[in-house]
Image (cartoon, rainbow, N blue to C red):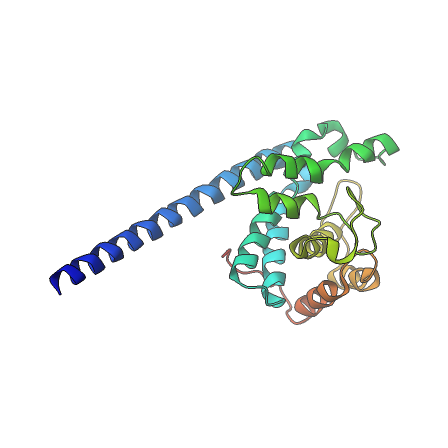
Length: 220
């Protein structure tokens, strides 16, 4: 009995130590990610606050869809880093106030795969990289970079796509003011089945219409 209790005590101590280690690792990852986002915000003025907004919206949408705690976690983190590939796009293009040329727009459209390439260098972040690399794919196959359609697009990328589009529409930019919440939600409704997964778009609209304020939670 004593040996059993000692073994149990050792197991409990190991579990608590691992739990503390994971907690420290999680905080470290978040601080590193926020540092990367801070660098991007200095580089691209538009992204200031955008990445955090998208992360929180994507997390809550994953919760709304009943995808589980792990998916909520991944939705949040992929939202935080979804634009990290823009660091590799020329700064004068990112901050240009006039319309982009075709060549400039082509360069901007490389940011999803550039972000995926950066994240895929880490085995722990590779899954997030797949989401980041696909968040500009469209349900009808007209998106980029690979022209994926329907369920070929990872589910969390479909979640991220809606969250990203909504925050982009409602955010002020140097060349235009953001639209009202009702206008953005109507646009998401209109694009369900073309740009967005219809199920995901419907859930997002219902989620935001059910609350008067931003329905954002603490990161999981």
